[in-house]
Length: 188
Image (cartoon, rainbow, N blue to C red; front, side):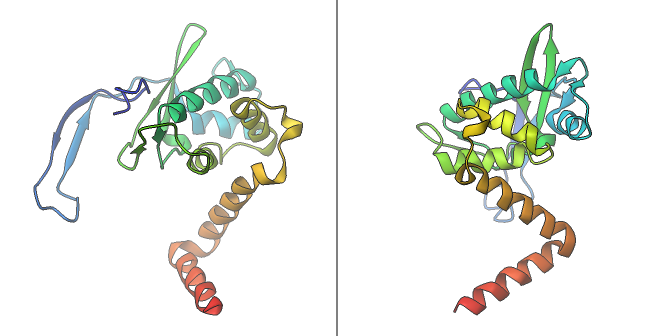
């Protein structure tokens, strides 16, 4: 579906689907290896540590190119649902930056453009490893506004996701689930 919609991904080779496998653990998808120079996560971590160029690509150039890729992906109706930095591979061909998505099992394909809420959910995961100055630059390119126009309502999903990641790292998945159950019980 990604290829049909013009979104870069690995070329499929084959899939094996066991009929009636409710666990989905006996189904397999094979694809070609994606030749790439780096992942978005690697670049964003480097930028967060103070680098302004990663493997010959400036932060601003990467933000602009990646924002354009995300806009096209979302305009084509793709809600990736696992758009983390390690699942976004980047290859350089001269001045051109090409992006390919891997680990595609969770994606949802809409018949029309991806709704705003799902777009923000994708982006919170994609740029989570990036520092806040970089996040704002990227979002300004994605949204087509100046970075100073990014208000609290635009940034709130990113703060929420940071909190979720922080809590997950501090108290673990099980602790996070217990905390949510506790909060839910208190509301009842």
